Length: 108
Image 1 (tube, rainbow, N blue to C red):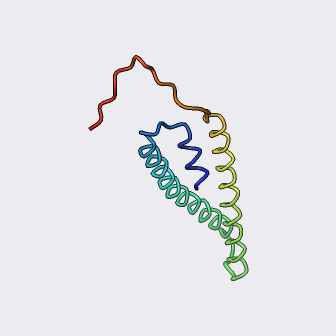
Image 2 (tube, helix red, strand yellow):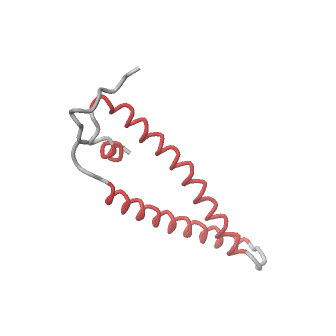
Image 3 (cartoon, rainbow, N blue to C red):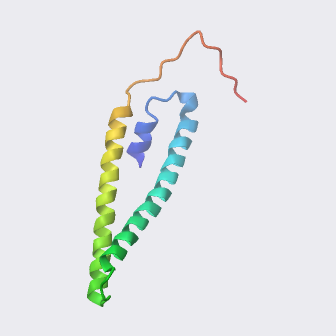
């Protein structure tokens, strides 16, 4: 998590660092919640498909569980690879350019 936070806030102005880190933390929490629910759903579906039409013996149930783990691992690897590609495309080095003629921001 520290490298992700550091990378996400690397080009942010000092006065915006708190807001930026809060936004990153919020997105990590939301992504973790949705990701866990999605992978759990995929794993449960894989186990159900593996067991469909078969008489559930203890060995078959164990195999279905392993199959569900494998399915969830492969999907998470795919999501990770996709996220890496998106990050590589969207990441820009340096600070954000500021227009010197822009009106000052109002802070409340």
